[in-house]
Structure formats: structure tokens, C-alpha cells
Image 1: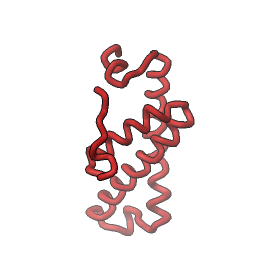
Image 2: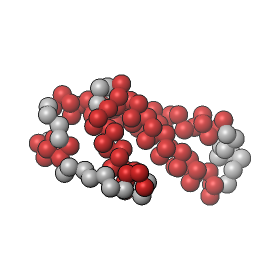
Image 3: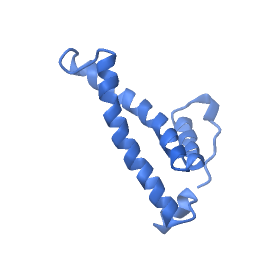
Image 4: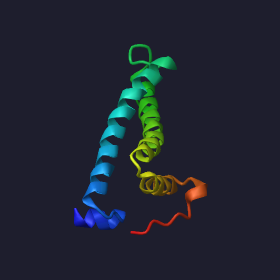
Length: 105
């Protein structure tokens, strides 16, 4: 845990616990929200080929996860940590606004 706290620049075990909780809640909520979104836009397993359904579902899940990560992280008081994580993820994906983002590791 000590290495993880140093890597993420976390000060306490309590903060680490909050961050783990945010990841757990966020992952579960993202999976739960994607199904109704897919049904709303008319894409469900029975009507659409698996070759179309799964890539769209995975992409949508990724987008929902990223948005919820900031929202839930903010609700748990960890906005700065999760916003920095988002900037790093966006930089890795090649989003030009964040290409020069440097993570302090």
C-alpha cells in the first residue's frame, strides 16, 4: 500500500479507501447505466449483430465510466485526484489538449 500511496501522492489510508470505494461504485454504476442507454438508442442484443453491439457497448461503457469517475470522485471529495487521472488517460489517448500533460510519478 505504501508504494501505491506514494505513486498516487496520497496522504492517508482513509483517502486510499475512499479512492477504492469510488472505483468500485463507479464501475458498478457504469455497467448498470449502459444497458438502459443502449436500449434507449435502440441497440440491444436481440435486434443488432454482435459485431456491432459489443464494440458500441464497450465504447459507451468507457465514455460513461470516464464521466462518472469525475462526478463520483467529486461527490466523495476526491475531484483533484480523479481529474488528474482523467488528464493522464486523455493524454494517453492522444487528445491534443492534454498531450503535454505530465504526471508526477
